[in-house]
Amino acid sequence: MMGHKKAKDDEIKAFLGKGARFCGKLIFHGAVRIDGDYQGEIFGEGSLIIGEGAQVEADISADSVAISGEVHGKIDVTEKLEIYSTGQLWGDVTTPVFVIKEGAIFEGLSKMKEAAAGKRTDVQKAA
Image (cartoon, rainbow, N blue to C red; front, side):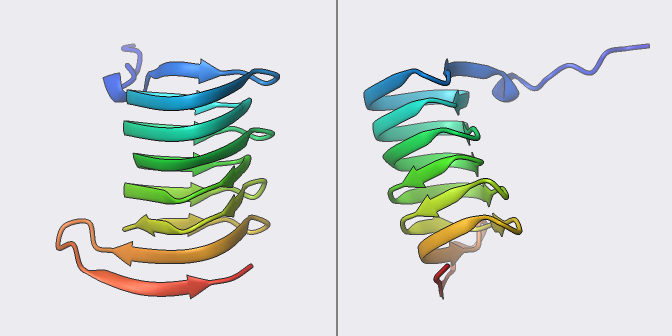
């Protein structure tokens, strides 16, 4: 039986663990996971995972973002943004796909655009 091989972009390229704190600018290709405290700016071509218990204060630009921790800042996503039940997001969002799971907290303005056509529809949501 052949094993399933992860796509190259799915491999975690960097990891900030619980108890770690970082301030600055993060630029990445692939996937990055943050479980600790991060403050600054994040620019990525790939996936950003904010783990449960993480505290992030940053403006974020990435292909996809998954939030299980707490995020304060502006987020611009080209593919998909997900906030899981333990996730909290305070800030404005631009994304073509926005998934908010039951129990999640979102406070801000979302601007949704079609990925292919680039059309925008403004939607406001308050927690």
